[in-house]
Length: 348
Image 1 (cartoon, one colour):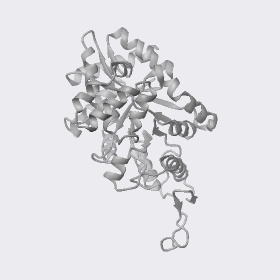
Image 2 (cartoon, helix red, strand yellow):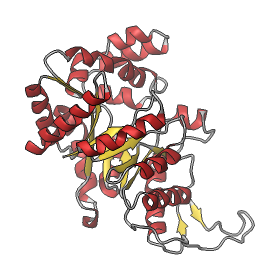
Image 3 (cartoon, one colour):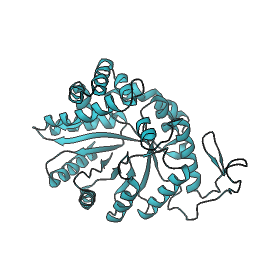
Image 4 (cartoon, helix red, strand yellow):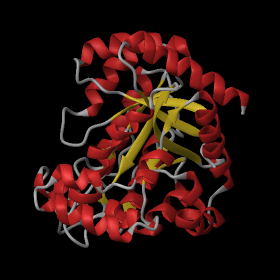
């Protein structure tokens, strides 16, 4: 099981990246860089590539709407080049609030667009002359659209790899099925190992039945906050505001993917209450309604024995990469957590 970590740079981006070399030495395998509607992730990942030697670097995630498919392919090839083949392209549909609100692009056909983008990226990386006739993207543009002067082109540079790994963030049944069929990796949010088979098992099975064997096994990326000790149980409460934000505030009634997931986990009543309270501006009250079991089961927080049990549950459920958030008061202690969870994972 690989150990990854999402880059958090609230204390300063350059300072955080300077610390990454320590995490690299401590055994961290991969770092994920978010974008959302903050600074772009691409320039930051290029900076990380220059400051690290072994660490894999992944976008976590680039949305599928704000860049053209070929721009996405160029970006991935460029990052793979400057990192000497250490890049993973993490993509996802994001949500209507960000896509339509921040980017001003209609949030349409996420499944169809994801499939075509992955197909186009792989054509570009193989240096094929790009000709694509899809429902959502057409290259070159045909007569009657544009000037009519478009030509089938192939990327000028020779990419370091023609098979840059593609990770898809997905939680809906059809999106997870698509991911299991065509992607290299899958990253769900709020991953509960005990409920994963019931919620996602049929979708994963349907997708894997159509999967090309050349893609290899699907990398399953689970996420979990990490704290080890006999007095760390209170850290579980740190997860309440974020869970409430996603379950309650990331979308309108009937249009919130994370709320749907909470329901599929079996917390229909709580999902309703969290959303009603959050949308009414009562964020603290919404956070208080987040099920304790959700916080506990998606975390690696507790005694060493408890964390070992949760790690084993993650692995047994199919997790192959564990994306942790170490919680401690200083850099040295957070490094120690990465070293410890790396050691624990190796013992499984």
